[in-house]
Amino acid sequence: MDNDLVCAYLWQCIIRLAFSPASIKDKKNWLRQYGQSLKLFWQVGDYPKVPSSRGGYLSATVDCPFHLGMCFEYAIEEKTHDKFTVRFMYSPPLSERALMWVHDVDGQYFKYPNQVLLSTHAQSGQAIQQMSDRDIEKVIDALIIHPTPHQHIESPIDDHDIRMGGGLLNPFLYLFHLRVQFCPNQGMRDAEKQRLIALFSSAIKNKCDVGIDKLMRVPEVY
Image 1 (cartoon, rainbow, N blue to C red):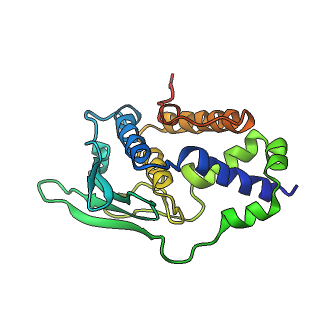
Image 2 (image 1 turned 90 degrees about the vertical axis):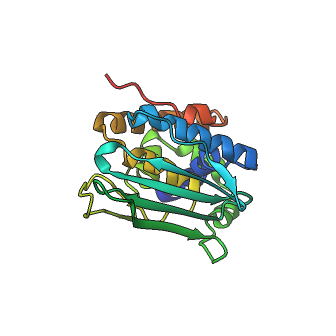
Image 3 (image 1 turned 30 degrees about the vertical axis):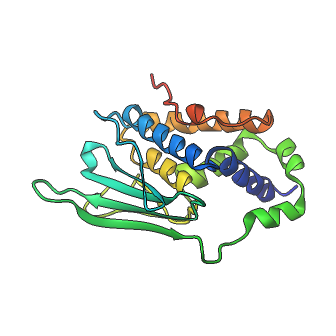
């Protein structure tokens, strides 16, 4: 099987295993544990607020590490999560927050049917047998660590290592990729990549779920 096709199956598999909570309860739990994980992963002082449910959306505000001087607000449609918005707010010293960036996904418009096309091949078993950890690494890089289509913020935050994924349609995947992008510790980011490779490799090979508690763990950095 062509290696690109193997990675395409792994792409869909990783999103299904880790970033597709089904019920509203599962979505709330995913977001709650996501917020709790940021305290240690970003090495900040406080836990973000627990997401609230308003007007059919799950929403919360998350303060980023202090050196960035910014926060982001997310709002995810409760029922289908096909519609979501993440608003990035910059906080200059001694002034109110100013809108800096909006990532907006509207699922009512056509999107490329990756899952439908892959299902017609019916070769997921072969892809799993053929996959290597290098294939999983390539997919994790493209989804989380270094999204293939991305933007850089040059002002007011000039940090070329922050890559804002521009083609991520899944809100939970998008938030998780921010978890990595805004981490101030490069050693933690490197360790997280290796942790995710091992986590997804084991889950896919053993045909088991990726529990939210495992997904949100913080890697040990020595």
